[in-house]
Every structure is written in C-alpha cells, then in structure tokens.
Length: 470
Image (cartoon, rainbow, N blue to C red):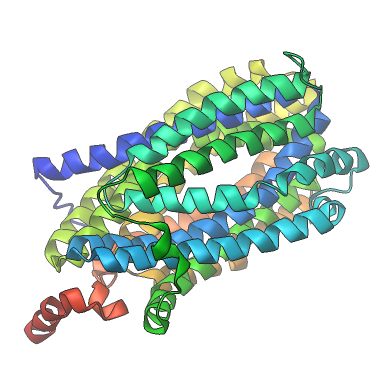
C-alpha cells in the first residue's frame, strides 16, 4: 500500500487533542485494575483468580455497552461533522435507553444466578465461592456504570474528551481509597476481602455517574442536552436508521464479548495458576495499549467527522495515516511489555509455578500486542468511523468463532498445550484481522456517508451531489 499520509498540522493537533485525554484515562483505568489485582493478590491466588473470572463476566456486559455506543458514536460523529445537534441529542437518547435495558437484564441475571455464572468459568469450589461474594455486590454497579460510561463516551464525539478524563481521575482515587478501606479493613471499615474490592468499584462508579450527568445537564454548553431530551422516545424512522448502522456494531461487539468469555472459560479450566497468570498479563497488556486505544477512538471520531462532511479522498488519506500510527505504537507496545512485564511479576505474591507461567505468557503477549494494535485501530476506529460496520461484523464472527476459539479450545482443553501456546491460539484472530482490514482499507469500499446509512436531511444535498459525480 502506498502510504500517502496526511501532512496537515491541524490533523495531528486534533489527534493529540482526542488521543491524549483518552490515553491518560485508559492509563488511569489500567492503574486502578493493577491496584485491584495487587491488593487482591496479597490475599492469595484464589481471590485474585475469582475476581479475574467475575470481571470477565462484567467485561462481557461492558463490551455490549461498547457495541451500543459504537453504532451511536459513528452516527454522532457524522452528525457533528454535518452540524446536526438535534440528531446527536436523539442519538444520545436512544443509546442511553438501550444501555439501561441491557443493564437491568444483567443485574437481574447476576442477582439470581451468581453461582451458575461462576460455574461457567471454573469448577474450583473455592474460586466459585469467592466469585459469588464479588458478584453479589456487582449487581448494583450495572445501571450506574453503563449509563454513565455511554454518556461520557458519546461526549467525545462532540469534541469533549476532558469529561471522561476528569471522571477517571476521580474514580482512580475513590476506588483506591475504598479498596484500601474495605479489602483490608482500614480506617474503621469492616474487612471484606474480595467483596471489599467490589464495594470499592461500586462507590467509584457512583461517583463517575454523578459527575458525568451533573456536567452534561447543568454545565455543558456545546450540546445542550437536558432531561426532557431523554424522556421522550426517538422516532420510529430514527430507530430504523440507528439499527441499520448500530445493529452490526452491537452484534459484532456482543459476539466479541461472548468470544472473550469463551477464551476465559478455556483459561479458567486450565487451573487457578493459569488464571492468575493471565490476570497479571492482562493488566500489563491494558497498560501498554493505552495509547493505541486513544488512537483508535481519535481515528473513529475524526474519520466520522470527515466522512460526514463528504470529504472522501481526505478520509482515505487519514485512514492510511492512522494505519501507519498503529504500526508504530504496536512496536512500542511490544517493547514495553518485553521490558515492564518481567518486572511486574515481582509485585505479586505468587507460587513458583505461577511465576513461571506468567513469564511465558508475558512473552507471547509481547507478540500479540503488535497485531492487536493494528486491528484495534482498523476495526474500532477507521473502518467503523467510515460506517463499514457490516464488513466488520463478518470479520469478527468469521475469525474469532471459526478460527481462534476452536483452535484455542482444542489446544488448551484437549491437547493440554502450555498456557502461552494456548493463548497464542486464542488470539490468532488478531493477526488474521490485521491483514484482512488492511486490504479493506486499501480498497476504499469502507466509506459510507451518513446520508447513505441514515438519510440525514442536513446533508442530503451533499450526498446527492456526490451521487451525481458517480
């Protein structure tokens, strides 16, 4: 591919404006996860494994929320590029209602079937019992976290990345303080162990929720979103338009989340030592990919804005630029894991067996992260921002469910391969999707203007002109 990259200074300034707050927010969130893991690691490998598995179930919920906001953010970014604030408010309305519905379903399932949920991931009774304690508190987190998360995420599409960063900073200190108090019983608080970690998360998410909606309803001057905009139901036509773009994103992310849970099930049935090792590796992986998540979000928003303005050639040029950035940051991430990974193991209280498994898995994560960065920027950023959601849905389903999951399940549960080799099989879809999406980027078939997807009145004339040119 000829890398004719963007040379406009304003483009890179905009990337940095979006990327840096998001990356810092991701780093803070990763820091919270690391502190959670370290604190629970002090209690032993059983609580650490239990919280890791319980959080995979919660991650499934989180990914569904990302699916909801993914389709919404593509629309919102293109509406923002077209200057249609009313449509953006309607997008917020629908996304929050869908999130609320999903949150209630997950809360009910968690409250009624915590043992059954944990038994999906592991058969070790000690781990199951600890996981039940964690999930019992988590029941109250779903609604407040989901709606707050979706609202803060959508604010990025209208140029406000500082809200999410501010929320994460507050959450960091609240979570760390609450964990210290309730896990270990400090400052007069009861010693709750793993339930204390869940309670700390609940308190932190409540703070996030309050800050987010107080800002949006009473302080934001850009969008003018008020409670009255959220009470009414979106029009039937708008709902159909959202489904045309959002349904593939939601299906794709839901299946990715379910696939991620299958990956966890495979690892969970390989023993608590492997689960603990993978939990440590995942913390380092998230820490070393904070920049690339910022690039992915920036690429989705900027591409959506550009496509919304009908600037097709410019979107192609920006897409090639983001592809080059994904390669650069992929190499940086691999180097960071290779250096930081082995050092991080010393922070945990591990058996000799678990320490060896962790080192081996850390080495393969250093390879995986390179392809992870490329496919993240392409699938969650550039191609999604261009509206190519159906293609991405097929790619996600095809490679995860037909290649990596069957291959990993056979390797880990039947052939009993080493943990590091099983993880390589379970993440093989990253490599395949990287090459697949690069070919798609080169073809130019990934660009769909908002008018093609949602019949947006504000840009109908621009789309009509574009069609005449063809």
